[in-house]
Image (cartoon, rainbow over all chains, first blue to last red; front, top):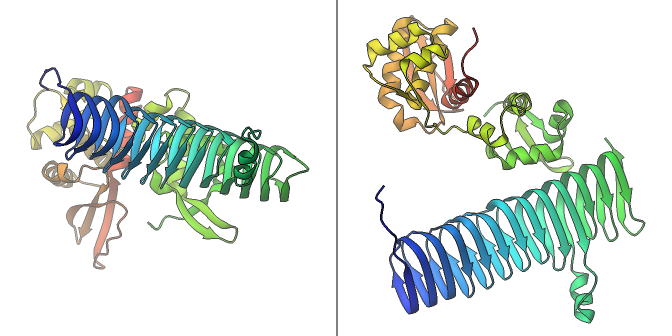
Length: 240
Length: 213
């Protein structure tokens, strides 16, 4: 490998650039990069269109972005909107705006305060949701903590530990309206410790299960303990 | 694949592991994605696994998880070749292959210095076959020649080595893994070794520090 100090790429205004290897990339305005990018850090303000991106440290998106390829890196903060057409492999996700991934997401920790939509599977060690999370495939995590504030859904959830809570209506009337639609909807939840509220599921299977208020579940299968709130609707619960 | 399947529920009952463990191992890539087979059953969509593969994998994980970290284990199970290289002396000393195997290999391929992992893998496959008693020295020579010339084109781990005999004449092939091949009636399949399996075994040996015999 050649030892060479990497240059920076700054786009202000409107510009189209080829890809390459940079230390810092900052894009203000409308920028487009046609090749693959490798960089230490990237900051996008405005509208950007990128190909495959590999970020060593941090990527932040404040305007709207489009990644036409894979996005790989240490951490990503989205305050605006970002769409990634291929896989997302980011260790730390911090979503305050909207992130859409069209081919799955993998990493260590995801914090979703805005909205995250993943087509395919999502695998993270720790997931914290205060906004909305939608996964079309399997949501696989070590621990999931959800405060329902918008709709959350996943085809299947596999976890070590999951807690789902409905947040108190902080927003008055608006909160009551959006609260109506704030459910976690899924086909199956499987895990060791499951503690959910306002969840609609076909099957919930696990070791220790607590079904809180507002749940609609067809079948609960538990190993060690099971508890259900009287305000929940569980059709059948069996110990296996 | 024609391997019989096992449902997720049966698997957990049989092995005593929990959903949390199963999903953690999947996240750590200890259990490959392809083994999670979704099928519809009378209770809706359920997940199934290839029975023999998943049982042996879980058995290995349970046996080794106290000695190796999950990440180290993931490396053992990945078909990727690693960077390790060993000298001829170290290979013999650590009992990875028998010295006779190495001598035979060196009569076919001239080599000096350390052996990189891919080369060790080829010698290891030869060793396994010779020690199983299923092949002759000449067949061993043929296999090594085949592996030497074609290994890199099919080193992605998804291939396997097949040895056949027809009326005493042997032939070896490298074919994509888990493919059915149909021969004429006189051909007998003698042995079949998936590269991924041999890679896994060799990595374990390298981690443990030697073969016990």
